[in-house]
Amino acid sequence: MEPTPAQTRHQTRHRAAGYTLVEMMIVVVLLAILAAAVLPVSRYTSKRVKEAELRQQLRHMRNAIDEYKRYSDAGLIEVDLGTDGYPADFEDLLEPKEIVGQVDMQKRFLRRVPVDPMTGEAEWGKRSYQDEIDSRSWGGENVYDVYSLSEGVGLNGEPYAEW
Image (cartoon, rainbow, N blue to C red; front, side):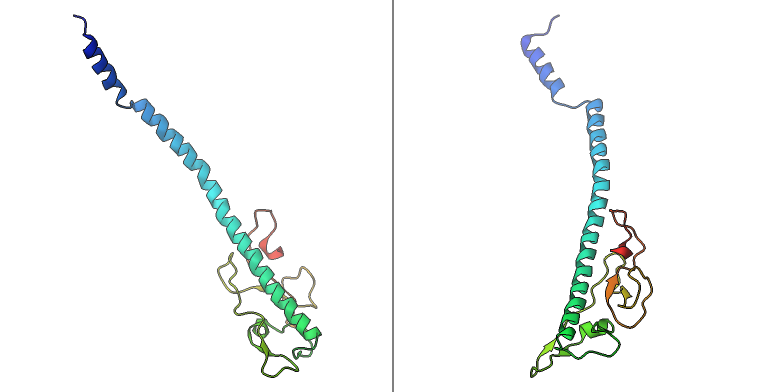
């Protein structure tokens, strides 16, 4: 007995209403491939954000050191002997300095020592003016430059300590 046209339409509509197991498997595989592609990108994005923050913190500290040097060269703050006008340590950047020739005027160069995003600590490597340009040990005379104490390597292949 042949099905009536109404029965044929009902059967066709019923078959089209659900998904087969093969279709579901294809969707799951495609989602897994997309997830696998997104994970490395998110990891690099996180590292890129930390590197940008490291550059910003280094720039901030180096600007504070340079500003301290400009003030000392201009004779606006008192300079300790043997420091060549650079801060003796980070404390000199944190403590307010009296401006010479001004009544009750002080200048603070840093509010706090920033945290190194690579190490998570507020500890930085220091170089004095008398040290070699690529030195990893601080002579202790003054603070001429700062660098990260992280042993990691940036996405550009350069160690963070050389930034």
